[in-house]
Amino acid sequence: MTAGPTALVSLTKLATYEPMAVLQAMRTCLEPFGGMATFVKPGQKVLLKPNLLGPFPADQAVTTHPSIVRAAAILVREAGGRPYIGDSPAVGRLSQVAGVTGMLDVVAETGAPLLELEEPGEFEVPGHGIFPRLVLARTLSQVDVVISLPKLKTHSQMILTGALKNQFGCVPGLLKSEWHFRLQERKWLAALLLDIHRAIRPCLAIMDAVVAMEGPGPSAGHPRPLGVLLAGTDFVAVDAVACHLIGLSPAQVPSCRAAHEQGVGETDLQRLRLVGPDWRTLRVSDFQPPPQPAEVLRLLPLPPALLRGLRRQWTLRPVILPGRCTRCGICEERCPVRPSAIHPRACPSHQLDDRRCIRCYCCHEFCPAHAIVLRSSRTSRWLPLRPVARGVNRLLGWLAALRQDRTH
Ligand code: SF4
Ligand code: SF4
Image (cartoon, rainbow, N blue to C red; front, side, top):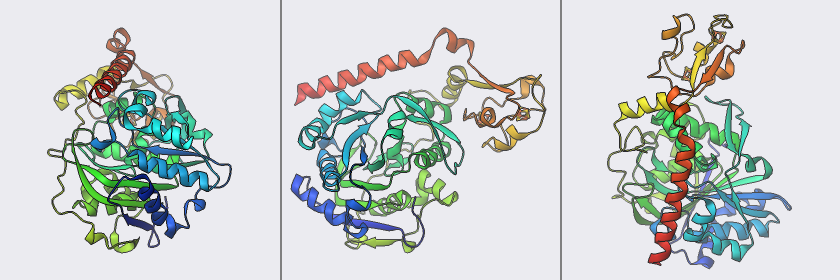
């Protein structure tokens, strides 16, 4: 992630999704970087990663507008690259979502095929903050370049869905919900977003803020025209500028705050090179933030204590094998929770603080004696949640796509 006083964020006014106007605006927006050819070399396989959260029509401002994806695909082709359009939607499958969001038209027009980001693969996280390895879409290892096409939206837990958060869609299928379930709190999810970003290393973000989403995002908010396209290679900086456009401070957004604390990217406008119209002329003063940002994303309408109880039952629990443990203390040191949630010197029933353990499994990962195993609870063995959740997700996607078909 490029950072420092030279980090550049380019802004271009764009009041319409008319395809030719979008293409021209994207060219203008990328000019300060030297155009798309700076990022894409002839013959390279380029993944365009829009926000395709679920089967929502483009005018609801839930997903990146097809005109933005279309323009990016055309510019990639002009640079000699081979564009693909990929995401792992939170609701439904990509094939269902692509029809409703208008992506199938982009596929037909540009010849950029769809890539389902559903097959899991393990990735190293260079310079990781917390997670040394992550399971992401295997397809990412088969592309040369990743270009992120986020939508500027509010988010009821993470306040903002922007450039950094967009890569969460590279976590395959229901693993996304599993992360929410495991980590639950904002600061851990923000740390995860940074590590996902480190693993994927997308080279460019082109943010669709032509019509943003305000209020109870990321899917139930209201479209809000902002009339701007943003681009940058420092994703933290792009998000920071987006924050200022909608009257938020980057310090209010957990992912920007975590980036600042970890020294990743730049959140200070004074240290950025902003190109294009003065951002103050694009700022809106009455943008509605999410109404009651919640620490825990209410995947289920249950109180946080009960969600934590469910986490205990349906996630793997680290357990120390007494015969193997050498009491070296490395697990305690590597546990990101402070004070540590694992105590190898305690009696077996007190070795794990189950309430505070976020199930990151760093202790398991780093134990040199392989003395920590991950055990499922009896409940989860009797009632495995994953196949049930997968079935429900597919059904929801299918129903939503059907409903949209009927109303259009
Ligand atoms: S890292 Fe492994 S060997 Fe060391 S104290 Fe923890 S469980 Fe025991
Ligand atoms: S005890 Fe292990 S799994 Fe739990 S938070 Fe600490 S390092 Fe992560």
